[in-house]
Length: 345
Length: 287
Image 1 (cartoon, each protein chain N blue to C red):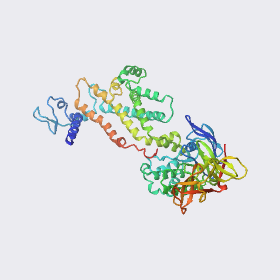
Image 2: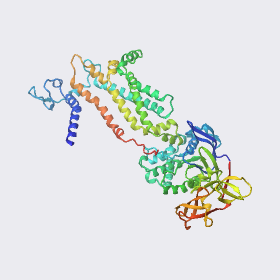
Image 3: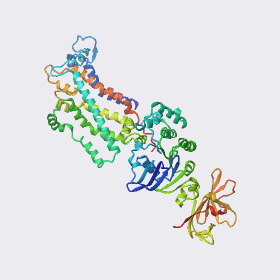
Image 4: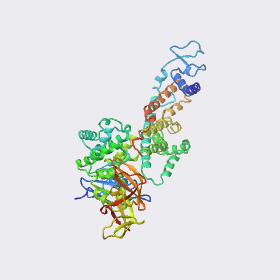
């Protein structure tokens, strides 16, 4: 089946600064794809290229199998929710919501416009604001209206550029569940750009990791989380951050530079590698106690311990009931199946 | 301190308001009272008996006389006012329309040598306009534009265009591009986005620019006198042309006409006042 959106080796530079080096990804029918990357990774540039607001310097974009460079932005039938609110300040909320439906490219009869505006307003709980000028809204209200402007249309693709980032925590939590559910109900695919790994894990069918203009990895959230393709990919997902250290194979064990044994090494494979393991896979026990607890942070359901161990600072996620305190000496253990091995370059 | 402030305000008001008050008084005088050696500044219902009385008989005859053609003129005041109105309206319209489009281009597109072009636009204001009066006169003679409304419309448009471009560029620069981008993604063309989104946001700027252009075109005297001393004569040139006619200067009519002439500008400024004063609202885009 032809994907709704297919991007191949997209490149874009601003002056000398490359924003996108080589980004390839695809969004299939009814699929929610999270584009996860830190600030400056090129997420916004990629979305703007898809929407037709920027012309790429290299690579191709296909919409429904058609080369997008031949399609004017107005004809692409894409809805984009901007990170910075872009409501028209001199229009009321109602006029803002109706604006996309009055565009010459897809003008709707006024009855249908009213119906869809009412539907979107109810969904986003902004019915009471409909007659208010957009310039008199709070930030959260504005972003809800901006999302409303996107959903009143039935485009072939939604682009969300940090759509929830500027909302307050409560609303963000709600919309993190409601927006994907809505997109699934409408059957419209979404390309959802965010820097928030938890948000990406929560909303996406598939995650695309983008860093410095390059796609590091793409796959289902579970895949990307369990088998990151590189240390950089591993660092983008998960909190507390993944533990990464170089190690060599010695007597059947992965051993750190200072001689600390990390875990049993499976037979075969490289002799030198970079290891990664998630904080939740590190258990703390008694015994020879080669590690010292430096900081303990209570995060509600669990505690995060920062350890000095094997020449690095390692994060461990331990149950709330565990009695640990700074200065305590412990023996970290990680099961061999939880160790991610990246062959040393 | 407070008293001093009031003194300054009252003095300022007297200084700027007195000529207008005198003009108002003159407009309801007979010609003899208007040019009398004894100042007459108290309107009364009947003419006073004493020749040095400050009272004078109020009359509306000057306003009625505006409709008649005075000696030395070709048409009545109202016809000249119509000339002024037509020329002012169309030159303001043309200036604002051209200036806004030009400013939009400079504001939104990468123009090679943008700064030089803008400086060139501004440089058209460097020379005192009257310095080019002779070449313009020759040009207008060649094109048969002398004494026509079109001639002055074109001239005032050209003179005010640089002001309009610079003013409008400032206002348009303040309007975030995100508005147009959102409109384009929503299915509007670039021009559609300009008309539906950018221009409504630029209303304040357009109002300010229009006020300046209208005032400048409305009051212009030098070129109006030189190019249109006959034909489509505007009000400033008409009053000046009454000098030296066989019946002498009809001061009450001049005062009455000047009052009428000032009124539309005052009305226009009051109309767009809310735009001039309203804080420009860019708060809806969080940068």
